[in-house]
Image (tube, rainbow, N blue to C red; front, side):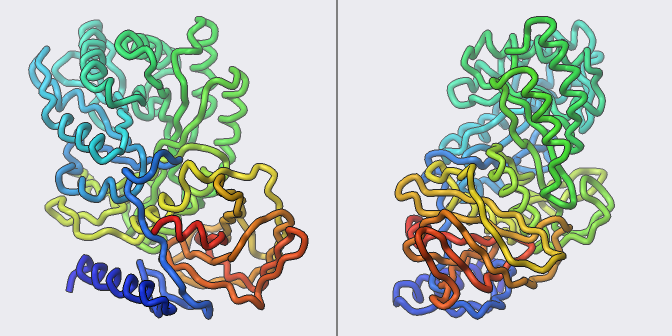
Length: 478
């Protein structure tokens, strides 16, 4: 029996239990074994993109320009993921195979279907075209167009693609990880040149610069911004994006340095995380190689990274929706969907369901409490990530908690934590496992409230996020 059928049977059994108002008896869900004594009373219902007005979340949908993934094979999983943006690459070489002739069919299929699913395409204008001498590289770590002919052809392509999709696409990103191959001076000039073409066609476009590699090269960004500032062109970009593929997902040191750099040029430029992911198996290729990742540890890593970004008010993109078949390097298994050899979907991984739970619970109706405080009684060896949020509708609290500081393991062990929340609000607090999506009743003996201060005893904390929230947050997703 394949995984899709098992998932369907499980879903039917869950709805039967809920409709019958009985406790749920689930031994394992989405790869997570139930090792708690709490009673399962509900599950988080995924919401589709069309049911969510806006949120912090985007998904990577890159590499279709090089046919490493094929849209028609996985598109039915996109809207159901609940994200509101999808990052795609422009594919100049795939679109212009004869000079001056653009074949948009492949990109039309993607852009218009995403829009129909109410997922906004975010287009990274990147990679060159071998039709033109010095027309730019076509693979990862590519150089930009450098010849006069190549630059003019690039400008023509950018103008054409923005004209075609301006009614549906707001976010335009300029090149991918230029800090690996493009000089500071050349990239500053390229930003000015490309943004001018975009603005000519779409004056209100949101222009994203840099997409710096996962080391978050803030010194490179600073030097480019300095040139833009000296030329009076600092306003050519609205945002800066960075990538972040690291084994311990909470490590933010270069990101905080990037924030300091950007603040020197005012408060107008925003920062977004444009690419952060994790493999689901061991590999000797690509980012985060030579670690013994599994589908379970991938789900942990993805949640920890995305919720760390949310905890710092940073728009966040998960890399990537589908495993990529990179010939000749092999499979890049960072997808939320497991790819079969023929590039069709074999099954959704636990990380896919984990992201569904995230997008379902954390949308535009949830705001971060910047003055959130807590105290926790934990073993000395344990470090906790904790962030507080509120629902705007009723100001009930949402707390995210996990053990941080180490590489996610393939174990499902927890520690007991005594937690005090000096300022919180719950009608009936529940405990949510963000990977399994199971919602647990917190026994009345394990929590108390006095004058707005809540005390929770023996709360199980894992090395992946759990949530304490009011039950109304879960019921909202029905």
